Length: 72
Image 1 (tube, rainbow, N blue to C red):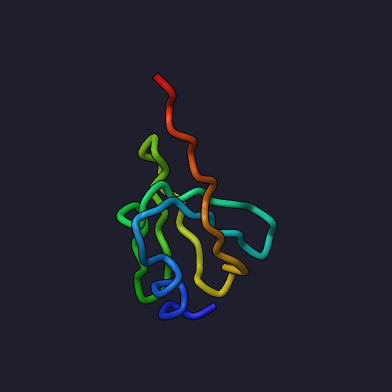
Image 2 (cartoon, rainbow, N blue to C red):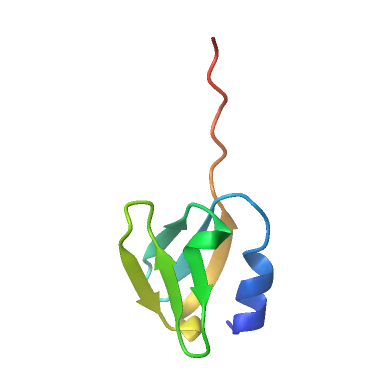
């Protein structure tokens, strides 16, 4: 995938998941947790850990699961 397509798919305010060619899936809690550079993509997890992947290894981007609102 190219960087422009990844950038376009990551727009919005919800969570999403990035799947790579080796079958790994990376949860992105919010688009602010994603950095798209010239040669790499950096994904920060909710706990602060960083994953660095090459854009050519991205095979899909899917919306994350929506949380149900808490009932009072």
